[in-house]
Amino acid sequence: MSGVGVTVEEKAGVVRIRLERPERRNAYDIDMARAMIDGLQSAARAEAVVITGSGGSFCAGGALGQLSDPDPEELRDLFTTSLRLVDAIRACPRPVIAAVDGPAAGGGNELVIACDFAIATERSTFGQTGPKVGSAPVLGATNLAAVQIGEKRAKEMSFMCRRYSAEQAYTMGLINEVVPDDGLDAGVDRWLAEIHELSPRYLEISKVSSNLWWNAAKDNMQSGLETLIQAIGSDDMREGSQAFLEKRKPRFRDAAASVDGGTPGGR
Image (cartoon, rainbow, N blue to C red):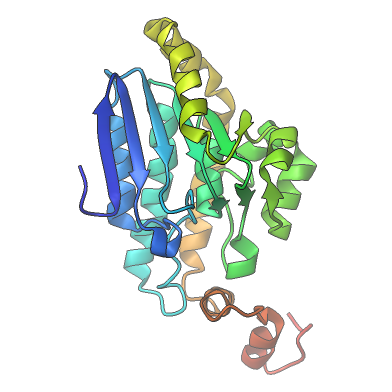
């Protein structure tokens, strides 16, 4: 499967899903998200799934190009399909490995949070972009991440939009292993070899049972997503995405003042 910016291949019992839009750091659109969902849903007979990027990036999340002049229906579809995507990772009966080389940002970082395991090269970085670009990371970073890395760290990551090295991500518990920059394939193969020796039936039972906290967070994700949908076209969304595209710092309070007709602190 290919042609939409995603390649899905099955070989030797492993489904490999590769994002192939390096010119935008593999940020995904609706068609790419749907292709990933299809790949995950086709993996029931496989031993494992590997999600990776191309061109020196893992994934920059959902494509931001349309946020400065948003089409509400298109964005609604992208947001709801993103929820289906992360849920498909958790619903897949096979272990899903994030093979990270380069930046995992925004929704790309939330893909890492959703995956069962994550292996990253030394040059990889992790972090959220939400409040910096006029959005919020409600599909993992504000809820499930607290279980993985602790509440204070999860809030730091999702509120402050800081970047973390692979070593920092490993220390926090966000990823399982750091490998040399030229050692990602070998590192993933080691994990796949271990998985090959295990019972598929009981791995599936273990995965279903391990979804306790994910299942508990799903209502929160849905309500957060509905809030994001209601905020489509807001001044903060337009200013944040425009600043991102123009590679400048956003001026959220200036935008609010021009709307309110008052001082920047007036809201």
